[in-house]
Each structure stands twice: as C-alpha cells, then as structure tokens.
Image (cartoon, rainbow, N blue to C red; front, top):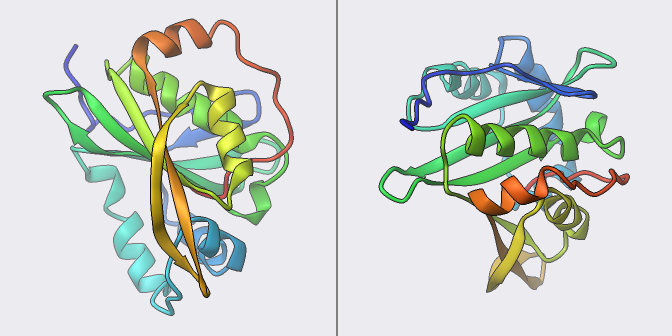
Length: 200
C-alpha cells in the first residue's frame, strides 16, 4: 500500500469530525495556544509569537503538505474547531510516523480527544498502511497518557528530564502502537472516560 499524505480526508466520528483546515480555524488556535495549560502540557516555551499572521502562514500551508497529515478537530455538537491531530516525521522505509495532538479548553473533558486519536490512528493504519505510530507524553500529563493507553498505545521507555518546567525537570514517556496491535485493539476498545489530552 502506497502512502499518500497529499490526500487530506474528512473523518467523521460520533462526537468529532477531523477535516482539513479552513481560514476560520486560525482564531481557535490562537486562543488555544494562549491557554497556559495547553502551553505547559505541549511543552511550548513562553512565546508571544503566536500572532494571527504567523498562525495563518502555518495553518494556511498544512493542506498542501505531502509528507505529513494535519487535520482540525471539530466538535460536532457546536461546529467549533477545538484542536488538531497530526501524523508527521514520516519514515517511508519503516512505514512509521510520529503522532501529536492539541486539544484546547473548549474540547476538554467530553471524550472528543479520545475519539479524535482513534480516528486518526485508524486512518493511519487502515488507509495509509502504516506499521508503527509513536508519540511522547510528558510525565505531568497523566490524562493524555490514559487516553493513549485506551486507544492501544504501549509505553516503551522513559526520556529522562527532557523538559524544563519552571525549576523542575520533567521526564517523557515514549509510547507506540503497531499495526497488528491496532487490528486487535480496535475490536475491543475500552469505554470512553472523561479527560482528553491537551497535547502529546
């Protein structure tokens, strides 16, 4: 199966729709990135550079990328963009990608992030033919780790003290899911629980 990241699909679940970005999404990301919890959980440094022009330049080019897949996460109940999911760092020979997500305050605690992760991971394995999807999650973000575990990600190891958090150093856990694990897990997903990742 050949991987084609130039196709930007629309994936529909019960609670969320994943779709290509539109211009109106930029304001939602400006608000999300200004949220202190989002900044901390995603490991973003203090930055006053998330202005509208910079965000428009970034999100305005996501739909044309041919080596990665970035999709907006839309809350079906409100029609609002509440975050994003990303498959990046494509390794063609090994059919592997990195995964990351950002869910803003408007999308938390309703299972939206869990469903968004399931949709993009399922697309990666079932439509793109990936063999491995990996991620890193910071130790101070157990909510995100629980979501990833529910979707079927397995902890592989610890990256020690990779992030400066005030006066403290924070570890990150490397997690991954393989195609055979997804095939086995998707038929027996655990029940949704409150709490979604703000990033990972």
